[in-house]
Amino acid sequence: MSDIAHPIGPAPVGGVHRPGRFSMPESAVGWWACGLTVLIFPVARVLVTHAIPWALLDTALAPVLLVSLMDAAAVTGLIAVRSKHERSLLVILALVVALPLAVLGSMVMVLQVVFPH
Image (cartoon, rainbow, N blue to C red; front, side, top):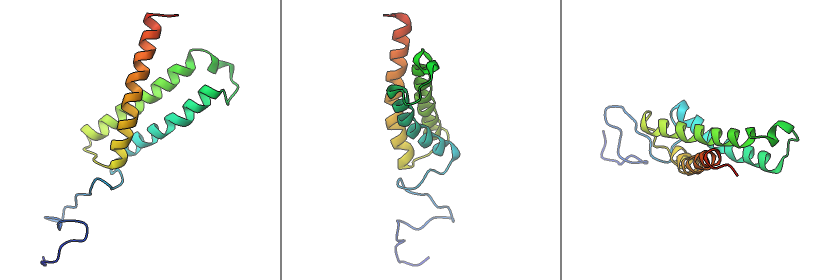
């Protein structure tokens, strides 16, 4: 190897390239985590504004659907970070957005079942 520095960082050792934090997700689980997190917001908008006039969405199905989507996004993000060792900024951002929403949504759902109004 030459003494010239690699333009992105240190030269890869042994032919192994370790992407930085600003790279795209490398695993399918990482992409799923990003996609499910992005999907939370249009689904929430449709459910809150009744953009689709389905009578079924006026029942308890709407909040259960939304909280299930939040939980799926958070669990997928945790699996991507812990098991697949994703360190992409997109996956970390998806986890930072989805995890608090999932915790809050799940707490609200449990409290609604325990203490109905």
